[in-house]
Every structure is written in structure tokens, then in C-alpha cells.
Image (cartoon, rainbow, N blue to C red; front, side, top):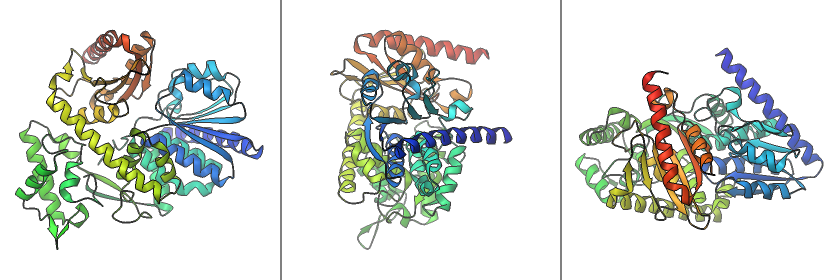
Length: 484
């Protein structure tokens, strides 16, 4: 514990350095340019920095990007009048940044695995540098929050946004589907600032807002074959369990159910999954810590932090990330209405993609060491990450990672999203390193975390890339098996 405390102190020292640089530029009247990723973690991080800079009366702008590459680095380099801040991106592209921005002041607030040593002019805040697990213990939004808190203690009330970012990045991997590590300190800040309450409950999507059958249909962690995405089958399933679906002609939500009714649902799903060959681990993911945002209105999608995260993901994945940033910065009017429509569109796309896969099982190929999801142009590159995550809990052989890709014709590349299991990473398996090595071999870029990673590779190298990834995975699996 003492060693972990030291790591946190070292991390916080670096956030203070970043805060000092940011405050210096604000005092000089320089513009701050925030560049962030389009997922829930990146959007939360951008929102945190946006509020912190607004409170400091800074001039700033926010840009949300699909990914980071040389084009983005060159655009940043051309902005001579501003201090660039990269949130939830940058660490995996140190080589590109060193080349394009050498000697320039740059702040990186990230948690992805670094791919080199940054130029001495950069301030690089990343938990992984200090030996903190960056896939489970601190997200990009968490790194941004700690920096915002170093800018001003007033920003402590933004801790809830970092909780949303961590949940959106699936960092609830500690006991009881809870957040742990440095994230736990952020949870404490959010609770003490009066923004958050933590309970234990069923983790069905839409516990505050949706009829029970819809909440069950929208649940994809775990993915329940024949149930997830199928509202009519969920109605039948719940009715057969004896769950009362309506009260005075009003649909009941999970919050309306008794503990006995919740136990019935949990047992029913457990039996159903067991009958389909799933083990107990899949079922246990249905119960865990619920993070309630107490200042948000009851019965809205923003009340539950996981729902909030999904809403942000939806804005990014449907090409409307500005809505998500605006909501993080306090908009509860038109932007929230539009974001709710984006969420419905997002859920619809996921269901359509899963149905397409069900109808085209040949698109999921099993190789020696990996599964490959050939998404082609049918699964949009903005959606491939979500589909990859869902499928990773629904594979016949859980010891094999899944490598899912979409074709991005206008860029002449494939966008890859890769996932593996907690069990493999605990044995030393590092998916980010495999993605980085394989992508670089074929003139692409890759990285991420040990359990979840991604890459972009030229379209013409697709087959060779996948074969090489399969070889690398097999090599690593053999090492694990041999204990070397």
C-alpha cells in the first residue's frame, strides 16, 4: 500500500506541473486547444478541461477526433498561437508528436500505453509511467480531472465526470463491478462533493428510465443471446418469471422492483445463460456497484453514471461528439434532447449490427490464436469498438482474443478494435503491444491497453496484418503456457 501511495504522489506531482503550465498560458492570455478522443472517456475528459478552463476565464477551443495520426499532429503544429492539451490520446503516438512538435510546449493527459520517451518540452501525465494500472485504475478523464483539481480545488465537483469516463472505458473491473485504484479516490471526491451515491444492484441498462423489458433488452454486458436486443422476447421471458410489468397502466422500471423480484430476474438469467453453456462469471457481471448522480433529475438517462457514459459514447459514435461535450459542461436543454435521439440511433445501430452478424456467422472467423470479425463496410468504423466489446463476452473459446475491423474506404485503411480477457492479461498477455508491433510492421499505428487495444492499417495490408497478429498471439500464448 505504501508503494502504491508513493506512485499516486508521483502522479499528482506531475499533474501539478501540467496545471502550472496551463495557468501560465492562461495568465498570458494564450488560447488553449483541447484535442480529445470521441468515446465517453475522451468526451468526459474534454468536458472536465472545458469547465476548468471556463472557470479560469481562459480562451479555449475543443476538438474531438476519431483517432490520432500524423494529420492531427500537423494541424496541432500549425496552431502557433495556442497551448495544445491532448486528453485521452497522445501517449501511444509519442513518436509522431516528437517529430511534429519537437521543442513546442505540449500537455498530454492520457492513460494509454506510451510508445516512447516524449520530447523534454512536453508535459506527459499518464498513470502507466508511475506503475499504476492504466486500464483499470485511472482513465483519461481521471487524468484530466486530477489536473483540473490541481488547477483549482473548486474543480473537485467535476469528479463525477471522471467517474463517468472510467465507467465508459469499462474500468469497473474490481470486485463487485466497482471502480478501484486511483479511480476510488475520485469516487470519494465525487461522493464528498455531493454529486454521487454508490449502491449495489442489478446492472441492467436503463434502471432509472426504462420499462424492465427494455432495460433487459438493452443490456449487453453480458450479452444474452436471444434476449439482448429483443424486446418482445424479453417481455415473454419476464412474464414467465412472474414479474409484474405494469402498475396502474404504467410500465415499471428496475427502480420499482422489490428485492425478491430482482432475485427472480437474476436467477432466471443465470439459469438461461447456464442452459446456453455460459459459466457463472458471465452471470456475476449482472450485479455490482451502481453509481448514481444525485444532482441529476430522477428518471433521466443522466441519473445513472453508466447510462450517462453510454449517452456520451452515442454522441461520439454517431458523429455528434460536440453534444456530449456540451452536456458535460452543463447543457441540459436542446443538446440533451439531441443526444437522447443520438442514443436511440446508436442502440438501433448496435442491434442491427448484431442481427447482421447472427445472419452472417461466416463473418466471424476462427484462426489458430484469434477470432476475426470481418466487419467490412457494413459495420461502421465508429461502431466497431462497441461491437468488439459485446462479442468479447460471447465467444465459444474465451481464451482467444477478438480482432474486429471495419473498412474506412475514404482513408484507404482498416480500423481495428481488439479485445481479450482479464484472465489472459493477468498471465502477462498484452494486447496493446501486439497491436503496436503488428500495425507498425505494415505501416500502420496501434496501441491501447493490455485488455483492449486498437490500430489503423492500410487496407491492402489487411490479410497479412491479420495473419501476423495470429502468429504473435500464438507465440504469446505458448510463452504463457510454458511459463516463460
